[in-house]
Image (cartoon, helix red, strand yellow):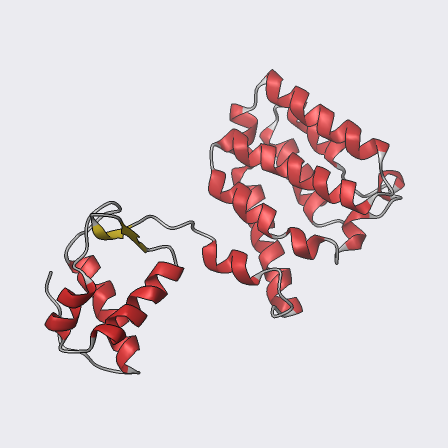
Length: 221
């Protein structure tokens, strides 16, 4: 594992960057063993404490972990680890939150063809149960949010993409601030496309119809 000359930022920043580059250049994969703290310290000519601090940053990201009898191991992190730790805190601007919801909309429109192609009769039965529960509790915001997550998570499940499902669930802390999406009278609004409308569209197995319905559901006029 070759380590090149250090440069820029604090010494810990430099060491962290060089460890990252060493991992990349060595073509390591999750499960592979890394040099120990002492080995890194000797190669970089820095104290073991500096190396330990740099590695602790990678450990917090879920990139490395210590295994008994094996030492430091490269690991595959949860993709949304960082986002999950901050998204519930009051640190994101309204602009950022809106853009996250926009990202969700783009993804859901993108998976529409796959959903229509892969959906089964069993999937439709599950979605029907979610829709019925939502329709029975239109004034319960928490129930509505739960139904929304369940309905759209099922669509992601149909595609086989679990990362999309995790991303959508992460937005839950901010859903309660978007009460316009869960207006108790939304089922009576002429232009609002509900989960019932999405379900009926899916039953047709018509991609264009489902895309149009999803567009109107995600961006109500």
